[in-house]
Amino acid sequence: MRSPVDLASSLSLRARLTLLAALGAGLVLPLVVGLLYGAVSDALDDAVTAELRVRAEDVAAEVAAGLRPVMNEGLVTQVLDADGALVGPGRGAPLVDRADLPTRAGLEVVQDRPVSSIGENARVLVRQLPSRTGDGWVIVAGSTKPIVEVERRLAVLLGIAGPLLVLAIALTAWLLTRSALQPVQRMTRRAATLSFQEPHERLPQPPGRDELAELGSTLNAMLARIEATVAHERAFVDDASHELRTPIAVLRGELELARLELGDAAEGSGTARALDSALEETDRLARITEQLLVLARADVGRLADTRERVALMTATARVVDRADAGHVQLQVTGSEAHVLADPDLVDQVLTNLVNNALRFARRVVRITIGTDDAVVVVRVEDDGPGFDGALLDRATDRFARAGRSRTRGGGGAGLGLAIVAAIVESLDGRIELGNDGLGGGAAATVRLPKAPRDT
Image (tube, rainbow, N blue to C red; front, side):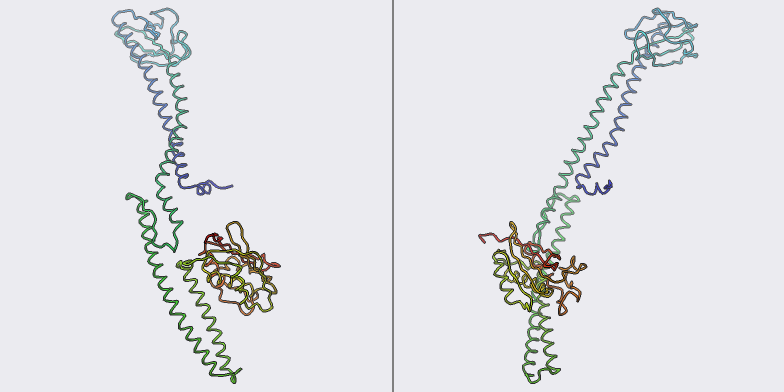
């Protein structure tokens, strides 16, 4: 079961802020509602008690003036003598027992109790008459039913309004958060489309001078620095292409000239073997240099500058014709398919995949070309031992090499699949590696967007 923290972290920022606002309102509103209910209830209660107190004071004044109190509309009034007997107005028994009468002048007792002439909801106020008016008490009773009814209606109203208010606060928080985060969403959508092919592009700058505007300004400044770095790297790649190729070509020419001057008569001598080995290492150095330049161009987004319609079956046939297969049988199956790419890059992808499979294969390498909806699928598989389990997840990393038990002749520099992955990614495709090839051998599957028919 997921914890509340994990569940909350899986929600969007807008949802989390809305949930936080709703929880805050849900916690604060009951307290506010309780205080409001208590304040209204106390105010009504005090109003009823004040009305009884005013009537009691009026009766005491009438008694002091020697007048006979009259019954007030809505209020029951009684005057008791010093013995607690009813002296008026009206008839019947006193509303309060003798034991409940206050014993000191000026004191009053307030009780909520049933009164026969009023009902269950009644309040009785008893006050002892001042000594100058004579010994005795005045009793005033009134109905509290209006208080009970108002409290009931208030409870129903607050019970309905409370959840509606929480919902309104949550909805308001959702709308306000959505409005506040719109600049972030616009920047996010634009950032998802940025690439090395458009280093001059920037994120939409939010208006104002708040934190979001500062964030947009900071990110655009970072993109400007990245653009400058990319321009510098591109210049470096261009310079390196000339500076590295030329001395290697000169070195190979000098070694070939020295080998020719040595002649066939020195075949097998130490000098001849040294020159032949130097030529092999020079060729290897040239290949590694070209591979590193390809990866450098990939790093600065220079691989997909030019694209044209390329027939994969035709390109594969050229690669197979010049491949050094030895005793391994190369099989090509499938149907013609076209991609939009640089032909040289497609040739390099196919060459690297085939050479990698030939290095591992025992007897067969199969190349299958097909289509899947709008995607062209190129699959190269062999009947070799397959990828090492520890290598499979990082086989497309640079300089990732299999163990000696998997290769013949010591293997390569570990750049072939890295170059394939870089080229495929620049063409908006993807590469998948596995051990589901022939007889459990290695398999590399490249998926590229199919070229439009009118290209």
